[in-house]
Length: 314
Ligand SMILES: Nc1ncnc2c1ncn2[C@@H]1O[C@H](COP(=O)(O)OP(=O)(O)OP(=O)(O)O)[C@@H](O)[C@H]1O
Ligand SMILES: [Mg+2]
Image 1 (cartoon, helix red, strand yellow):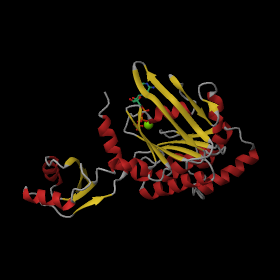
Image 2 (cartoon, rainbow, N blue to C red):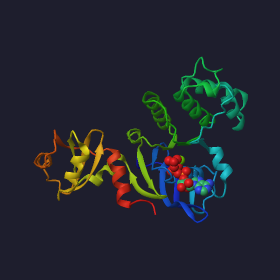
Image 3 (cartoon, rainbow, N blue to C red):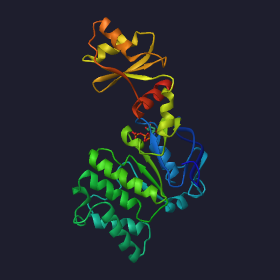
Image 4 (cartoon, helix red, strand yellow):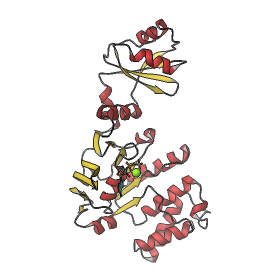
């Protein structure tokens, strides 16, 4: 997705809290209809950035144009044009599903007819038939999240910010949620979404990795994986992976290792390194090693690599 109008345009955006810089000179843009993922560790600055883009928090410096509106000049105008699902739940626990929808419809100033039409749409989209009179607090996690999404898009915004929408829900509900995000994008809605689940980040058209307030990497998942183009990852099955890592780390051809489930990922310095050579070196050192093969980098490999290269926050 390289053409089309810009939905979000961020230039040199920064936010300080006292002497602490939470968001540091961040620039990126998102096209209409794009699903743009924001990845970063706890405290990286994702929510702070989103809150500035939603007109909820004033930037210390820099500009952000969202839906054609400057967030600093007209934060109220931005709020009208966007949908926002905050990291902490935006539902009213003591209201039912229907009451939550009506409440948000009231905030957005929807007419009675439109509200009823949108209410039906949200109940349908979120699979909430038969639960209209259930209290939000009694809904299982996946249903709550779909309801929260429905409430965030009740007024049909063309840009939606979803801050950690799938935290703590089961894999099936997460998949269903991502289907909804895909559907929004197909209709031309721009979605900026944060997640800690790197598997689901693969659904994003483009990704930004934010680390210690700074933009550390930007591109499609495929582009980001190119950091390993000349440094293949060799996956080795090992009964005692920690011991295997110690031996591998001492080999000159190995740049670094990391634990992946029950196997070890070794990043090698030279594309010509034979996987079997690493397994042999392990066996020679008295460490059991099963199969060894070059594997495609996962986003988890990319994320760890980017963060390690930059180093821990000061
Ligand atoms: N109102 C505030 N006052 C002071 N510091 C703040 C404030 N809001 C955020 N911070 C700090 O700014 C940094 C970035 O926080 P932010 O919530 O943006 O991170 P995040 O990437 O969303 O993290 P998480 O993945 O845990 O949600 C953190 O160190 C946080 O403590
Ligand atoms: Mg956050």
